[in-house]
Length: 262
Ligand code: NAD
Image 1: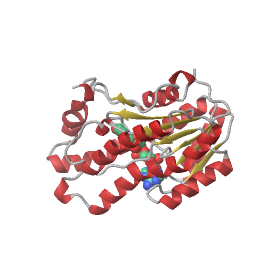
Image 2: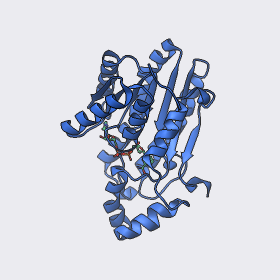
Image 3: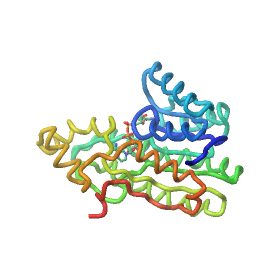
Image 4: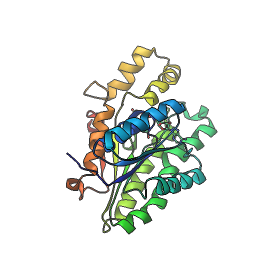
């Protein structure tokens, strides 16, 4: 099992879904963690208490809105003062909007690019100098099967995720001799609020029932015919932080039940 005792992690978009599972996995391995994202105060407090119990180390929260570069800088500064400079950075916060291109709302395009792409740039540009100083770092960007292939009506998301895959390769090359690795994990469909929330829009855009969207759009793409679990993604993130993964950098690891093998 990966031992992260003494390591400090910043996991964005971790009050829910994949990010929360990764934060739990890191805490189980002994890391102190800053989580980020939105949610009712009592729920966030319960998550922090659980993380502290799992790790025996500190757990703190930032409610920074990562579409705002200044808020990202504040989050990183708060992380440094609360738990110390991060050894592990998971850029996971993301959002989706489903609409045909001619009707795609401009504000949604701007927000998806800001959160799913530009936020990854901002946190990396701020944290990499700290990792360089420490001589160690693990950067994990939650991309998507949509970093490799497209689906209709998801132009902003597909554009942002393809760009994240290219960005990750670039920073992997820039940090390759400095004890830092940078990789993408690219899940297929994982059952989280992000997927649940796009069902009504997909029903409208394609004229399908809920059942048809589940089976003929989402799971149709995945030969395994089941959703990827958040725990599976967390296991992969944990492995990428282990000593055994020191030579894995610039990779885009698919966890999509065979979707992109087709
Ligand atoms: P989710 O909706 O369960 O969680 C999203 C998290 O991001 C929450 O903590 C939310 O509060 C936070 N967040 C949203 N907007 C934010 C903002 N502006 N600033 C800061 N935090 C914000 O989603 P999820 O399914 O766990 O997705 C996590 C990542 O995984 C995303 O990047 C998503 O694109 C990617 N992904 C998801 C799937 C899937 O099927 N669920 C598949 C492939 C990739």
